[in-house]
Image 1 (cartoon, one colour):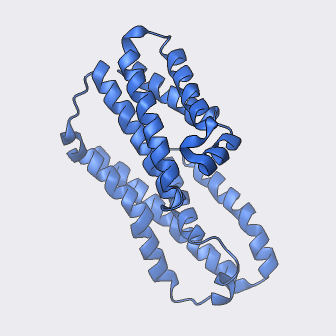
Image 2: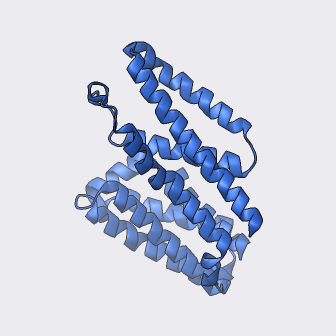
Image 3: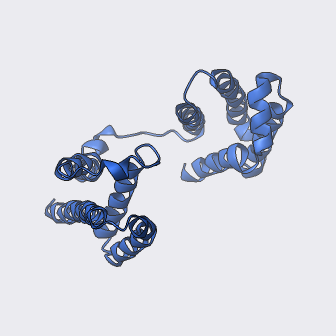
Length: 238
């Protein structure tokens, strides 16, 4: 089952990403189902499937399902391009393709999935920790830092919600380093962040901004470490 799943995903990656030039994407978006590159794209997928499956005739039904569904999904996506957020559309498009691959996999390799796995204590603990170090920690930090008003700095040009996402990512990295017992990775992360922040601090030459960033960084790393250590402690008790 795993071998076939890897082959199907590999073929999808080759066809949808590796061998799909931007020129094809642009042309497809402009001409939709009339674009010749849409059909080139489908042929590339067919070739990728035949290659990874070694042209084994027993997979003909699966290949047919994947190719036909891929064409239909792509046509729908192209027609919805101007109506739906591109990021959401991309996610839905890839999800649809993955679902089709899963259905094809089920045809050849019957899969039984035990939903009780989701309710195992270890899984629930992990999910709780992930939510804790992302959204819960974000709210905690906002609440603590809100007592300081630094609008003169936050009004500068910046990507929308970039700070929140960067904070979530850094806490996820710290959490991963802690639960895998790679504490040295945290030091590397702090050093990397210091390098990137040096430009902001040297430009501002303001002690308040320096202290503000330092407090935010220590809070972020501290919360991630607390969640990581707690995760390891509770996991050992289970």
